[in-house]
Length: 177
Ligand SMILES: NC(=O)c1ccc[n+]([C@@H]2O[C@H](COP(=O)([O-])OP(=O)(O)OC[C@H]3O[C@@H](n4cnc5c(N)ncnc54)[C@H](OP(=O)(O)O)[C@@H]3O)[C@@H](O)[C@H]2O)c1
Image (tube, rainbow, N blue to C red; front, side, top):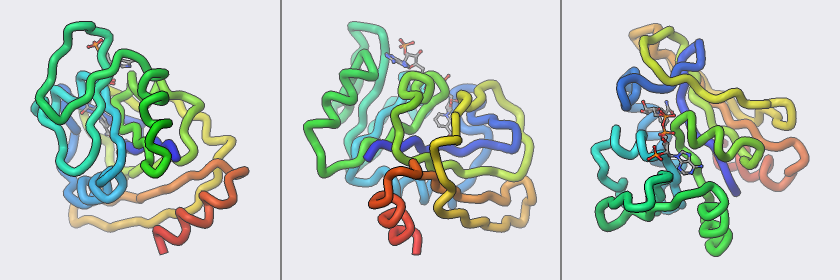
C-alpha cells in the first residue's frame, strides 16, 4: 500500500521556514501511528527541517537530486521517485508512506492508494502549500474531528481510499474502528 500523509490548514498551507506552521501533538501522534515500522519517504528540505535526524523504528528515505548528498546512518538517500518505488516493491509486507513536502508529493502524484489528510480549521502563516490533489478517484472512508481549546487547532483526520480497492477500504475501516 502506498499512501500520502500530510496536515494542512484551511487554505492548504503545510509549511513555514522549513518546518510546520503549528504545533499539534495529536497529529504528531497520528503521524507516528501511520509511519511506525513502515517505509517513509521525505524530501531533502523536510528532512533538514527535522534536524537531519532519522525517526526511529521506521525506514527513513530522503529524496534529493544532489549526487553527493550525505546523511546520518539510518537514512537511505535516493535520487528519483522511481528508485524509491523499486526499493519499496522489494518489501511487500511494508507500506510506503510519502510524507512530503510539496515537491515530493508532486513527484508521486497519481501513485497513492490512500490519502491521509489532517485538516486544521484555522488559517496560519507560512510559505509552502500542498500540491493539487485529484480526489475524484477516492472515497472518504473515515473522518474524525478533534476539538481544541484553540479553535484554529481543531482538526479532522480524514482517510481517502481509491474506490476500486475494496479490500483496502475494509482494512482502513477496521484500523479506524
Ligand atoms: N504539513 C505537513 O504535513 C508537511 C509534511 C511535509 C513537509 N512539510 C513542510 O513542507 C516544507 C518543505 O516542503 P518543500 O516542498 O519545500 O520541500 P520538500 O518536498 O521537503 O523537499 C524538496 C527537495 O526534495 C528533493 N526532491 C523532491 N522530489 C524529488 C525527486 N523526485 N527526485 C529527487 N529529489 C527530489 C529535492 O532536493 P534537492 O534540492 O536537494 O535536489 C527538492 O529540492 C517544510 O516547511 C516542511 O516542514 C509539511
